[in-house]
Length: 319
Ligand SMILES: Cc1ncc(C[n+]2csc(CCOP(=O)(O)OP(=O)(O)O)c2C)c(N)n1
Ligand code: SF4
Ligand SMILES: [Mg+2]
Image 1 (tube, protein in one colour):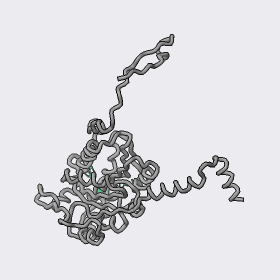
Image 2 (cartoon, helix red, strand yellow):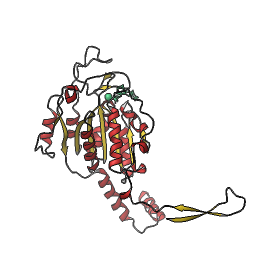
Image 3 (tube, rainbow, N blue to C red):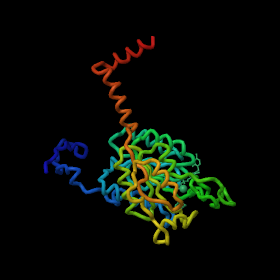
Image 4 (cartoon, rainbow, N blue to C red):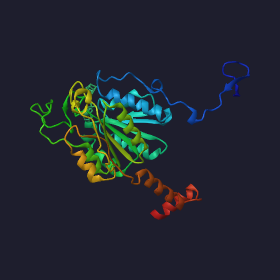
């Protein structure tokens, strides 16, 4: 341990020095991952029993296990019960405009390649108001992990039909039962061009963590649909996928080729509760890498030039 000599003027009238011990820096590999206590912020304001608690707890586990330090945690969300997520994480993040979490996250991802950006939100935020952004972020393959906590309903605004609500679901907007064909998040993601597409359920913590880790390790836009029950406005929605409630949690069939788009699409079409696991995973250059290449090439063209020379050349071109 070395010492640091600091001028000590602010408290004493005369200048003196104090020797403070400076601990030797610990290598990241030797540091312990941040515990829940170190990353948990306010007490979550979700209803007791809400599935979103489980997703948050597993995000804390991921942060600890994968040693993501405070300055590298980036948690972004839109608006909704599920989108309150960043409030409960004591680190950098943003609770952004309804449906606009992905454009905000895209800016962060493209400008800070050293971060892994996590986006959390609900089915309404992702597929109604944010539906357009979902498609474009997926096709551009912008590096981030997007976890949609799908409860098949608008929870925050107290029970309206969402794009994933099943036909027949009675809500404040469909008092006689929903009549519109729900979207299928797996099909939507695959057809939009997402390069990692997975499905899990908040009632299966080990599986959620495994999907989060695989998504984080993917170089591209990784999308997870996580069934997360709204106990207030759609209780029992996912019992059929929960063995503790007499349901069945079925993994992907053995030998499923994750690069086979058609196979992923077919599996996504299985009736509820369907399959869980990685439906689709391919490698395609990210927008992050493609843009970095453009920037490098542009910078090489003006290498060695002074700023005023670059500006002058621009003015000359405009003449
Ligand atoms: C521009 C805009 N339109 C509508 C709303 C109202 N609103 C807030 S959250 C929400 C839906 C949230 O549903 P979902 O994304 O499924 O999240 P959940 O609450 O179910 O987790 C709506 C319609 C809003 N806040 N801003
Ligand atoms: S209303 Fe539903 S989604 Fe919102 S906190 Fe309560 S249980 Fe969770
Ligand atoms: Mg919802």
